[in-house]
Image: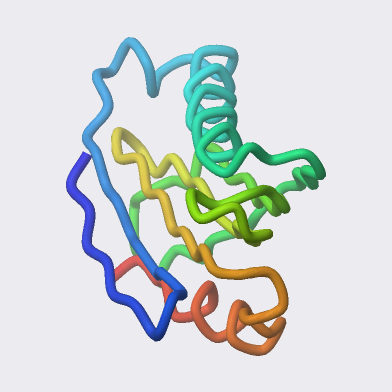
Length: 126
């Protein structure tokens, strides 16, 4: 997976992408296993105790042949490496044979809902 990230203070914003083999992207059950694996890894990284998972949508530009095959929204509260409470918010998408991981991580209470909305809505297929 290739990752690009930036930080504001102690808050991290990252976008990762990976090409999936057709054997992973071609089957709905296997796609869900990929999302489960990534979600569980993200939550485990913050020793997440409270986890909320829901569907996530991603718009495809008009006249674009790509298909969003899966989308998941993840929110977790856990403990960072410094022992402080952290909040993880992520979106996972499978678009054709591409996986996208859009993640925000910061101290509990430091990432506002408006900041998350801005970050996640800024991620678009171009």
